[in-house]
Length: 247
Image (cartoon, rainbow, N blue to C red; front, side, top):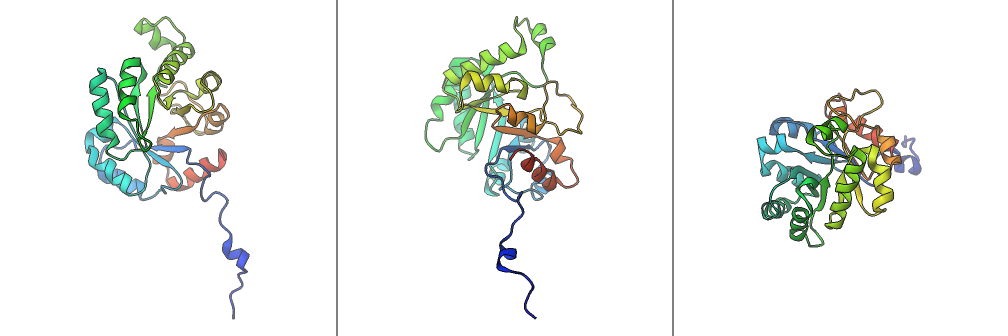
């Protein structure tokens, strides 16, 4: 007997199969290569990007970044470079050769440092360059302890404006500052937000947190989510759920 499928049935695909734009960045908060590669086999580079931070990079080095790129993942290299301008510029040049999609520096390094990084990433195929403003684990208490006479919102605005002036492509910020930065810095400036938690999650060590839906409504371009995905029994299912919630 012929199959009972119509042509239209065969053509149907799940509505959540592929996002129009990959706005989710999964933080690979692991400490070794085997665990990382086992995890990424469970997720799809068409559905998300990935972030390599200090712990994983210190453990595995550039070779793991190259493996992830070869597997088709857009890699955000999250090393928060903060040093003298020449050193940061040289580090960014080397990082770009790894084929990463995006990298960052720390805005507290100052405008000259950010400009040095920008100057070495000046071709059409260069990675996106963004700056960290105030870590989402920090708030007014931490600013007071550092002797910085500012509120978190005002301090983030100042650093983000400096990053834009230096020619960077965006900043890392909390979703709580995103609406203000979107209004201040315009539609083309990228806002990347960590500290994203699903509605049922605890805040862990983050202070300025937000749900995916709240972040997108506040004008965020990219969401960085770690443990809610990496510690899930079915990480791909969680990724699909998040993508559907922010479509």
